[in-house]
Length: 111
Image (cartoon, rainbow, N blue to C red; front, side, top):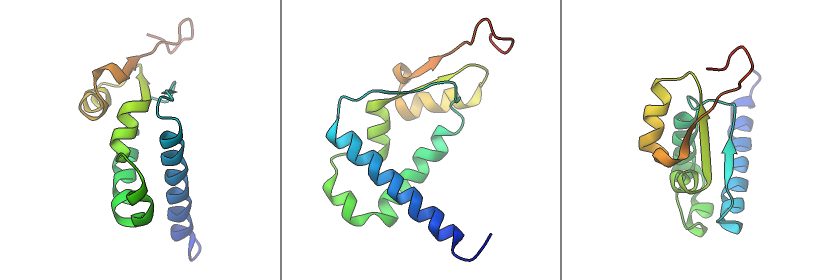
């Protein structure tokens, strides 16, 4: 990793988060399905977004109506098909109506 790579990555993450927040503010009824990606990564990403929101985005934070977890809970659906730990965590994080079972029938990895 070259010098400055970590800070550039964080800057990109902050910019991406800010873009997502403005999208959710502008289109509060927008519904986004995260399909065929599992749910194991979601708690980590939402936690990271909460941290960045509090620690690195003070000016953006003042202009938004919700926290990252609230945007996620209101606008995103996630799917799982083989995971057992992440879906349980997701029920607490985003609610049972936002975690969906998926199957890829007739593919060999379907359940």
